[in-house]
Amino acid sequence: MHKRTHLKTYFLFFLLIGFIGKSQSLKFPLNNRGICISSKYQNSDNPFVIFENPSNMTNAKQKSYGFLGGNKYLLRELSHFSFSFISPTSLGFIGIGLNYLGNADYNESSVMFDYAHNLNNRSAVGVLFQSQIHKTRNSLYQFAFAGAVGMNIELNDKISTGICIKNQFGINKSADASLENKIDVLSELKYDVTKDFLISTAIYKQFNHAPNVIVSLKYHYKKRMFIDYGFIGGINQMYLGVGFSFDKMNLEVFNFFHTDLGYSPALLFIHNNEK
Image 1 (cartoon, one colour):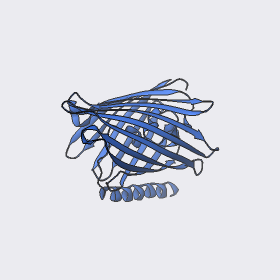
Image 2: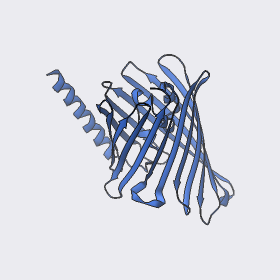
Image 3: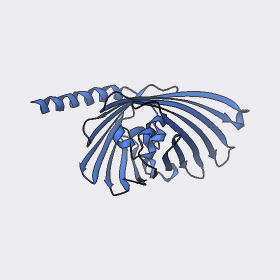
Image 4: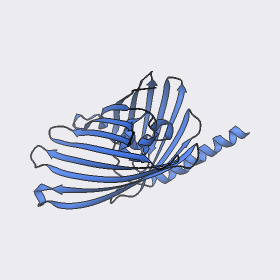
């Protein structure tokens, strides 16, 4: 009876989130894989959390780095590649991220640096600095810069929450260096149901867009196999991933699916110095 009650609770929870998410609209950055990966357990061995909230780095137990590559909607023109690295140090946690999207006709390149520090056993803060270059074949470079402040709080041993506020502004050289400020807000709630079953929800508010709801699940089916599933409200998009854990690395194949635009397959590789 107790188990049935838990199952009903989970079902109603996802039904509610799905209803809210379906009413939203947002151009969601598919190459930002970090937004869909959360929870304390996953953060401990996933360097791509620096794309999400810099304070989540403080869950890392060792140095780790990762590579991600794929095609949005099976288009070579929308190929994307990412590299991420995090490391605990005596002064705090540092992270470096590189991202490339597009081809010779249009491309975006970005570099980010993250720093995070524990305030106490239950909370942490982090900052992010990012620079981005937009380039088309027949136009001048356009530059964009961003700074972010994030915080993560563990409410108890199973539930944690976080918030990240990011301020972006662009400089368009072809328009006399005009500036445009954009503020994005990401709010998270993470629940480690068991050590093998993880739930994460996020509300992502981009500049000039309605808030968007993101839900992700991770389940360790066997000792060396895990499954990722999630959906992104408003744009009717979901993703499914299957991964395998080895002694010092994780390898995952996953795919985003959009009802109108189609599939976006990708491959994720993560290496940890220690396990």
